[in-house]
Image 1 (cartoon, rainbow, N blue to C red):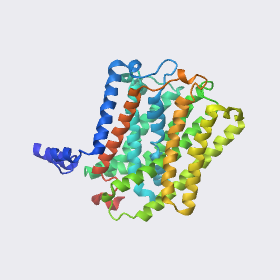
Image 2 (cartoon, one colour; image 1 turned 45 degrees about the horizontal axis):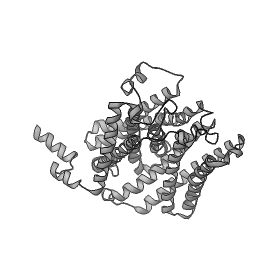
Image 3 (cartoon, rainbow, N blue to C red; image 1 turned 45 degrees about the vertical axis):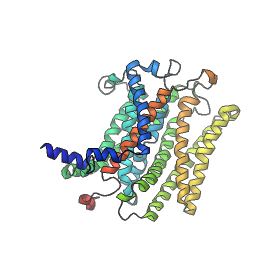
Length: 404
């Protein structure tokens, strides 16, 4: 029995190698850099758990939400929207030509939510009471209650959507077939849940009309957050698809680069549409509330940079790429778009928050806050690579090929 367990571990986890061979093969420059980041990140995690939020962060009563909320939650959840966007298009709108992206986007969303929740635990003062959200504290009038429950439900949905891949890997056909039948229903429910909390994250800032700079504050913050999550999610699919299909090209038999590029251009077209809708709504909001006089000074300049460099220009890039079939321009547009979502979320949560306070008195994250977030991102990337190396994500399992 022990020999069988050892054989299973060696085959499924160590990929047919001995433990020594596995360690030796993974001593690379990239892994050493990841190890260094993880050392600092784990130190920050342990330090925060032992000494609390006060010593481990620069948070205060004036700035109760800092870099962890801004980056790990607002950014992390927005960029974990591949399942909401591409996954929905595949399963609900019948875009079967994009079926090859179904499993990777399910994995992206699952890991994005799992690690966002993991990071959130360190930002909660009493993380050990989190279960109260699900059992005792039913605050129906609270946006945070809505977001918390949606996170919990959507993580379960992501698990259901990715479960068939796990059971194919374990060769458990009955379990695989059972969850494969649930995917369509999970996707339908997931659209409602994901759309709800993506917009609700913007709704959290509706209660601070005097603390958030007028250029970023708007009654349309919920739809702004939802739409930006849509083009952010599509951009992540383009970026991840480009990287994984290059790094794991050996896993994909009969890889058709021309067909893959065609699909990237199709994704670029969808991203362009979402960007134009977002840009039009932002301009209408700007004109309706007559915010012209706020364009003076640093915040006006920075708002223009966000809107032009990370919304308008990427939209033009995608448009030109689609019309002229330029694949590299789609990829560049995706990078700019994803970075723009990061900039927007950090602007709302940190930079434009309490804009009237002098810069010398504003909140700046401690190094432990950055180290912890970097550690979480590194863990996510390593987990993503671990799964791609072992499970049939980028290719179809030979025993189940006819069932996809």
